[in-house]
Amino acid sequence: MSVTDISSTVPAGASDHPKSAPADRATRGPLDENEAGSIRPSVDLGSLRIDPRRGMQVRLEVDKSNNRAIAVTLEHHGSTLQLQPFAAPRSSGLWHSIRAQIQEQITAQGGTATEAEGPFGLELVAVVPVQAEGKFGKRNVRFVGIDGPRWFLRAVIGGTAATDAAAAEDVHEMIRSVVVVRGNTPLPPRDLLPLTVPENPESTEKVTV
Image 1 (tube, rainbow, N blue to C red):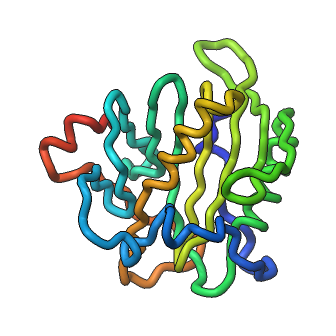
Image 2: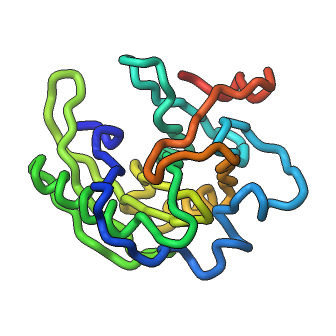
């Protein structure tokens, strides 16, 4: 099972919940494009702008059935960070409902997922079943959700940062440095925001699909 197979959608009739995000999100990030201020060097992936770091690899995860990018994965010093941006309501949050659904899906697949308080609020500390090269195993991951203005950002932390506190601090800063570009196009809540390969040739060299 891949973490991109774990849905971040919830039934349309789900109850409204308050937004879940750090109290300092609007100043420390992840920022909305209208909060980002002066333009800084970044890898432009459409709805996400990623702060480049030395030694970091950026990979777009693509749904082969429709050739649509559905997530971006950052690899840095043995840790991975998968990001997915979604449209969200202006006044209510999605993370409460999505967190419960992810927990239910992981448990149904034979894994475990426990709620824990993290630097971005409540998160899921999970062990998920995986299959690679015909072999079955388990993988430690952390699911983080951040409700922003008209967007929701799902982050999945894997590799060293899933269990090592020092490595996790580096990944937390990577999340903080993300800028979400919601745009003005009307989209239903929970729709994935478009991800694109950057047009800048210098940025493209850092991105694989």
